[in-house]
Amino acid sequence: MINREIIEHTIIFRDDILPDPVQDLMDKMSMFPFVNLHFSTDGGELHTMYALVAYLNRRYEQESVRVYLDDTCVSAGTFLLTDYNGPLFIQPTFRYFYFHAPDFLSYKIRKDENDERLRDILDVHNEAYYQKLSKEVGLTKSQVNRIRSGKHVHIFADELDNLSKVFVTDDFFETRTSYIPFSAPKISTKTPPIAHPKIK
Image (cartoon, rainbow, N blue to C red; front, side):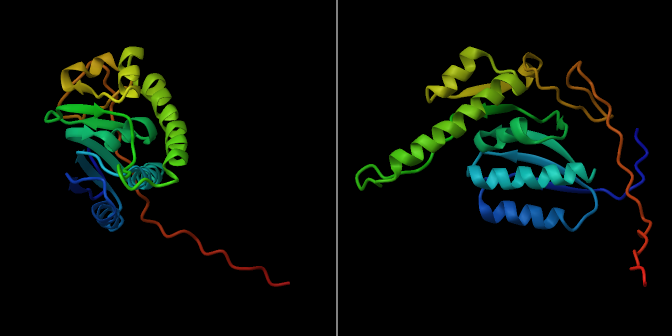
């Protein structure tokens, strides 16, 4: 068992990726020097998920967060696999990843004249996402083509070894043979020296 020399706080997020719950999550996390984030979502908005991933990447660079995946990680939640730079811990309660092509809402009858332009921009974004799913996550060509065609793909907990993405287990259990031990970061309590301007 790891001897952790810092005070840890655990936060559970089981909500949709929408501005209000994600902003509330980031505000709560910002109150603590180190957070164990237990994460599960049914998906949501792309731009909101990118904001969360950017925040988590900054916390990871500061060695102040550890992300656990619980239950399900759906739709926009899968951007943790493609864009989060830190390790992802898999909980025994994890069930599946659910991938599909990102899309945007539009009217069917009252057409927006910008829909076609927005679709072009989305296609460029989606193509980059598909490349990451293939190269970084390890989905097969068949699975990526299925997502590209508008269908969905599930990767269940017992299929994680089929991915090239390596997940981490905590020191209390192991869920796969590719095990990466985790060392808790040490947060300095020393106050940095104050730089005084030189007087000429």
